[in-house]
Image (cartoon, rainbow, N blue to C red):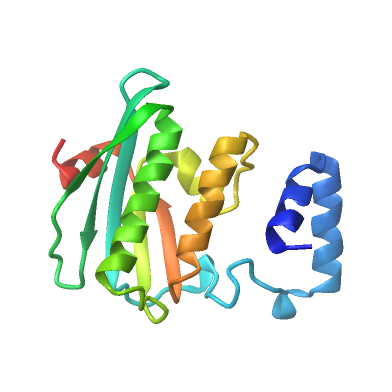
Length: 179
């Protein structure tokens, strides 16, 4: 069974079954030995060191669903960065546009660096509580299209040494992105 098959099987469980599974895993793996879901990457709560890059992202749609758009900025350690604007073909929901924008930013950063990101720590800020909470694992991702996008984001994040994805208020995001 692949890791994705396992995750899909867990997602299909009822809330009570997931709680029971989590309790059994905690029993089997005491906190000191607990495996992380980030495949050898530092857990979010453990990373307090400096970051190499900061990503600020935002996405949405004209109508919901409707034509999608997004923008992001990748700041380096010196604080340099330029906004990138995106348009998504077809109709997407606001949440899909948020995920697609985050994916585009992560892929852009990896491409800029020649995919050598394994020693880098990144911080990501966005004003979508849904995306932040789902990627961080605090909220379930029941909708199949969002689950697929979330899994793509998690796959991209695994290329980094550490990451922190956090919510920031919309007005702060708008100041950074200039719209």
